[in-house]
Image 1: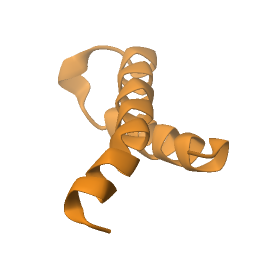
Image 2: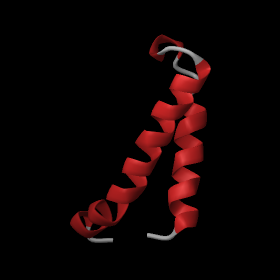
Image 3: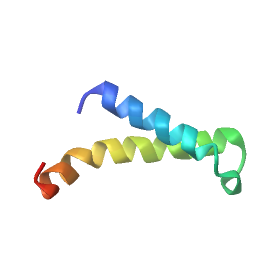
Length: 53
């Protein structure tokens, strides 16, 4: 997994996390979204393998 892919998903999920006001303040939502993005990007190769891509 290259750093570009991990960074891309972290940014995308961070921005999406900002849309969830129930999670707390803007910085908290950005952090949660970033963490979710890193996890999603890290798991992507496994998902591709299982899916047969």
